[in-house]
View 1 (cartoon, rainbow, N blue to C red):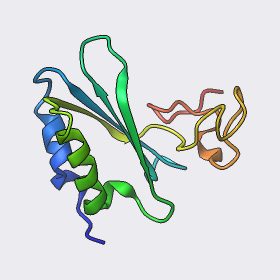
View 2: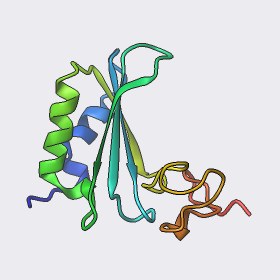
View 3: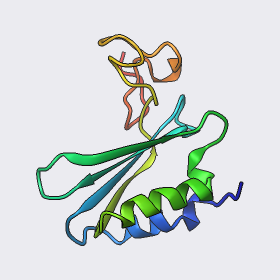
View 4: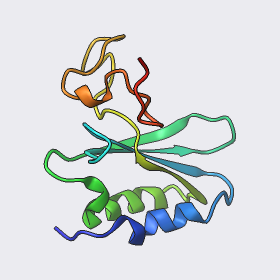
Length: 128
């Protein structure tokens, strides 16, 4: 597996260029804590106010996917295939990789990711 630093990421470089029009790719990272990303979700927004469609997700059980060059190339191919003009990317991990109502009951915290229980996903601060 080839790894890369987050600073050298072509996707991160494209995101730093800012808004260049639609379609926009949204790239969000999720993980069991804010230190490791085990899921990336990429949505394509075709127009202002539109929903992300299509939406693809990639997962890893054993490594931080932000450092996986092969996976990043796969994400880049997906983005390129939709003629994306702009990329918006989260700075870090923004929540649990499991989905409420699918992987665990609605209104509860994920039992597999106690780090995120009662925590703001963007500031990482405790809510209570």
